[in-house]
Image 1 (tube, rainbow, N blue to C red):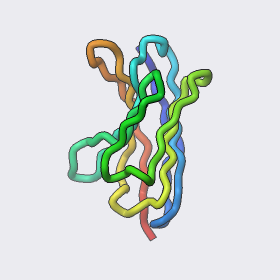
Image 2: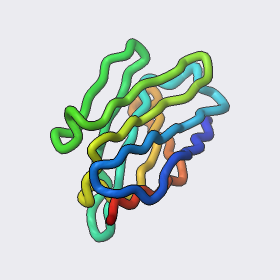
Image 3: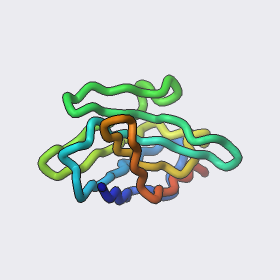
Length: 116
């Protein structure tokens, strides 16, 4: 098993930036991929970005060019740098760790609010 702890959420004005962090502990050696998902009020959870063990990244069209996912394998930490934030980015952001056979683990989430 793995434990995922997110941090870095908060209130930011439109056009601003935030960096989310997700620290993984436990059986991290078996993780295939890590990523960020988000869930806005009244909406389903959606993929934001993922990064594989080899460093390959994947982004939702809505965040391409604005968000960057990265990882520090030595620290078992994945980051999400979010720039040019919009009110539509307001959501609870969840860290995800994917294991073999598509078994997923989730963090508890961190709230990002984009508002003036």
